[in-house]
Length: 267
Image 1 (tube, rainbow, N blue to C red):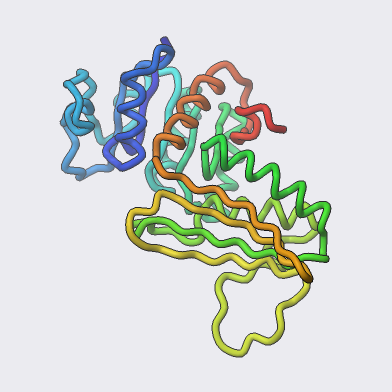
Image 2 (cartoon, rainbow, N blue to C red):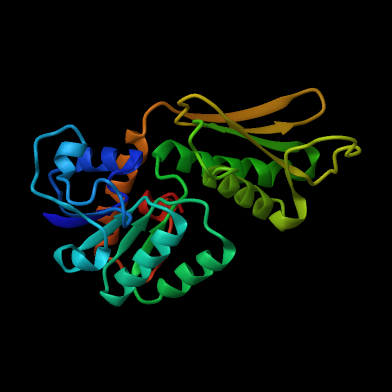
């Protein structure tokens, strides 16, 4: 059994991952971490996930349990994740990161630390979304400038970052496919007299409401026709299962920065 440590264990994703870990035949949860001051510190992970107690107590510092595990799974916050990556690198433990909302300088540090340990960094770990990543790149490379490209994403009312990490990844893939720098062509929402749409624009729109797990649509709008590619997630379990798959895959890999495209063999 591969011994796993879960960071962000009391969050929505953390609880689903912990629940699925209890059923997995290859992974065993041996450590759980939450932010300092969390009301869940000292609690049994099984209990907060509405399961039987599993003997894994939530702690407030990854350093307290890092030596117990073989791989770290992190769904927390950008600042916390970066600290966890540093600890993982210091202890030569591979880490799977599902956190989104990183600043460029935080991504740069993660890239530097991947020279020391293998890291899977993915804004979305579902199989369907990663197929979406592959498809939109191929479609964009064929259509080029002949079609206007718009991305629309919707998530639940509690999501704190916008656009979603998945929408940004879609935009990056498309920009690369058409030979553009995303910073030069991205338009985040529109208001007022903006003038006619520029040919190379990539529109990125964020919607928030209710309990939507995650919807993403990429539209290629041409003259007389429109191509739409949509992925809708109805359960967080699809992301949780992807995280477990990534954890099993990364444990024996050489240092480097990997994506779910690597994990799923889509590259």
